[in-house]
Length: 347
Ligand code: NAD
Ligand code: DAU
Image (cartoon, rainbow, N blue to C red):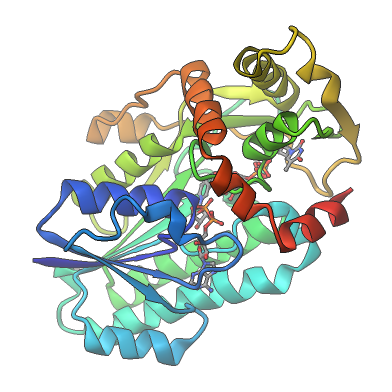
């Protein structure tokens, strides 16, 4: 039985990755390590928590002692590392938390792998899940490829870029078997409502203003989260050591166009007059250092590993809206407590 440590498995993407691995690979033992920050939620995993090949461990990756003790106890075959502080706006408020978790936390995991996998690096694998934001911002044309130079602008993307560099350095220096993927914006169920799509769904549902930064002209490239989880699966099993893969849906949307589409879907789902939800759109002060455009070229992944996105965006967005409308309790739970304080501080 393969023992795989997945970090950040109680978060948005991590929970989809954990669910996929637990369900598809009954002969893998999946240990989900998560600190359960505001973004981590075990309610994301109630459907698989009783499965015999699943185990949850509450731990903080910034705690090197705890990480080393875990590696000493469990003979992991692989790590799939997703735990991170993930929200750009929060990184603008408090960069240090991003340095601690995304940089120091990643280095702690690498150090443990280096120490406890000694003599066995080739048969082990350290998979680091990263973002397209490390490449910086595009103008009106061009796309990010795997060899695009790093040019991060936000404290979040700077911390992810630093962690990517450390992962590659442990491959080049110590021979650790590492793989990195850089993915574009994900959307889907269980997405924390601080991010654009779930925040807008929640606000439209509650007749609150939908904040659009600047003029809404920034462009993001959206991918269904389950397609990302499938890409991680394929790359984890098939990539060669030291490789990087870009993951993206070839699906660019201007924020304002996306929000109008979402308003249209919400009008239909909530039985509102056409155009009613769009009245909630409110232009607010732009994000500092706001990257204009991201676009991922995932040709390498498509051609080498035969991965293609499975879901058309309009259908995926509708499914996402349905999930939020059907899971009111989930939404209520995550937007209680500290959420209000954070939300009100933003505007
Ligand atoms: P998320 O914020 O929803 O989840 C992060 C998880 O990490 C949470 O469960 C949280 O509790 C856990 N965590 C945070 N700090 C921790 C610590 N110190 N120790 C242990 N656990 C900790 O994030 P997400 O959107 O699911 O992103 C997951 C990963 O994917 C991140 O590495 C992110 O950079 C990357 N990524 C995200 C996107 C996206 O669109 N969301 C796109 C590309 C890459
Ligand atoms: O590109 C991958 C990245 O995508 C991931 O690495 C990050 O973890 C993830 O959070 C996401 O970053 P973005 O900053 O692109 O996502 P966010 O949902 O915060 O914002 C999407 C766009 O919408 C961005 O241009 C900012 C804008 N926005 C965001 C919010 C929260 C608004 O206009 N209004 C808002 O209220």
